[in-house]
Image 1 (cartoon, rainbow, N blue to C red):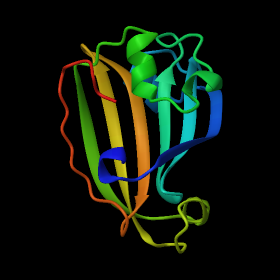
Image 2 (tube, one colour):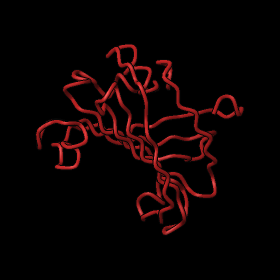
Image 3 (cartoon, rainbow, N blue to C red):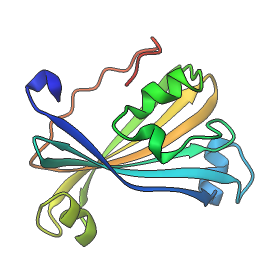
Amino acid sequence: MRRLGKIPKTEVLDFVIVAATVKMAELFRIPVDAPVYRISRLRSADGEPMLLETNYLPVYRFDGLTEEMIQGKSLYSIMLEKYNLSLTHAEEMFSPVLLRTMESKLLDTQPNALGMLVERISYEGDRVVEHSKSLSPGDKFKYHVILRNNNQIK
């Protein structure tokens, strides 16, 4: 956003530990009900809501992570610096969706407006270390994706 001349802001909406569902357990290769961080954030540019992001991280890999640690910081930079994460690759899936009422309210758009869902699965070697879901209003976002294995994904 800064490169586009916009002032970015990130608001943490939710930071909780949840029990791994069957799907999460399979993805992270952890037991069902094992602790997983769920972090929801609203990303804005120049005060305009652009992205509603939810990250799921296995607690065993990021033990001790706190809401205070991620305030105003890149989650990936914390994962790299504090937890010595070595991301090797990531997969992203893009899907058009209709935004639900709460999502529309947070993203300042009409209910049932067209949005874009981006699901990302990030790997450290052959282990999944993050699953994220990002929603953006269809009329506000353009994606350009470059993923590299240079330990600088932020």
